Amino acid sequence: MSAVAVLVAWFWFAVVVEDTWGDECKARAAGQSGVGLLVALGVVPLVLVTVGAAAALVAFAPGRRGARVLRGLIATVVLTAAGLLLAWWASGGMLVAHFALGSGCLG
Figure 1 (cartoon, rainbow, N blue to C red):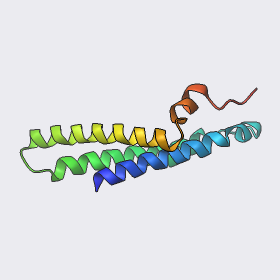
Figure 2 (figure 1 turned 90 degrees about the horizontal axis):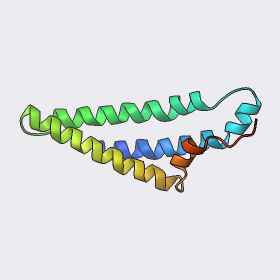
Figure 3 (figure 1 turned 90 degrees about the vertical axis):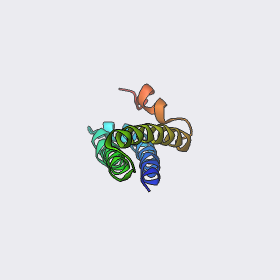
């Protein structure tokens, strides 16, 4: 269940990034920015879900504590990488470009 939650959170993050960056020029013209919305609706849920999934993976995995922590961390890294690839795919390859290129607004 944790794996599904992390992947859904990454997909949601891609949707929020696409929507926020799509409206960034309008927001800047109005003297505002969509970065706060991106953080509130995209970054915060992504971080909370990932941390919660990591905690669940560590808490409920069988075995000794050290082995559980190691497996939980490895699973979290793998899920994060898979989620990032999913988000990149869902955004048509533009997820990273939005951050690298900025909003593209003039002025």
